[in-house]
Figure 1 (tube, rainbow, N blue to C red):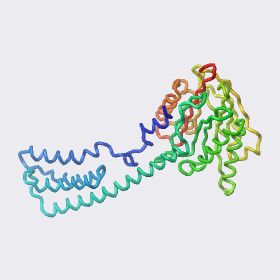
Figure 2: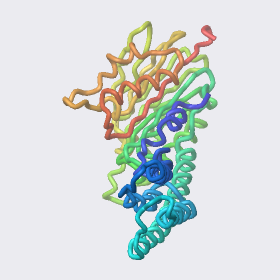
Figure 3: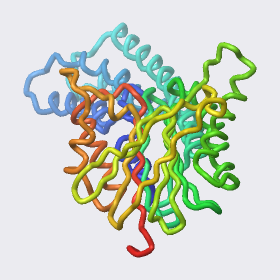
Figure 4: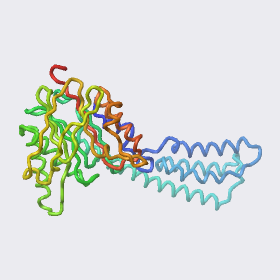
Length: 369
């Protein structure tokens, strides 16, 4: 079972419409042939000639929308044949009409060739974007150590698969650690910062003994990256979670972002986690971040969401009530829980304007395995 991000990508390929690079719908492929067959059938059935030959002139341009140059040329040639064969009773069109149809057909073949090349380029660019996403924010495994996990990601910038939100769950010598955050900016401009933060996190998991030290490593990474540009103002918010070896305790550090919601006994509990300074603004020089330890039971789930979820508004301006809705959407499977929240969020706010990230963590304490 892969992460929910992969599932939703197959159902809704990056929310693209036909005019945004998605494959043409089936009716667009069938329409030119159906129109040609309809005109021929109507002329053959009717006892009197019908003045509908003008419809044939629309077939080559329609073919451009969904067919390649070869199919467009074939349809254009069939239009010319139908116009000239006496059995279809199209009133023997003059040479001017035939030349016009031939010119439109040739022009349509040229446009179809250009469109096909453009579509091939879009496919290549999308493949590169998908590879970049897998490299920067790879799909989460179903289970990391004693923690089951699922992540969902939706970029705000349409036509892209990457953006300013990130998450990861890694196992190391000090236990399982998770991070979810949001860097300054959106879309492709934020990808480099996301890659740098995740690289620093994955290294810190291996050699830092506590979550506040991991936060300091991420803070230093951003500070170093922005040191060469005094106007960079590079910062990020993040929540770090550190699970004990037996998954019975989680330690949480919040850097400029609210802590997770704890789903327990049919309720969503807001944990008392005080956010400290965001990453990149001198965390190492300020007061050390507050670490909150939370005991865990079998069946507990931790739900983390970016501000793209909590600040989504409906048409009346009301924020999405995540804490109120979450208990009714709860599911034992982390993937199902993330799917339900995403569906409910889109129902509440169909036009989500910000990056949306959700991370569901279901620790399995040793006595609950």
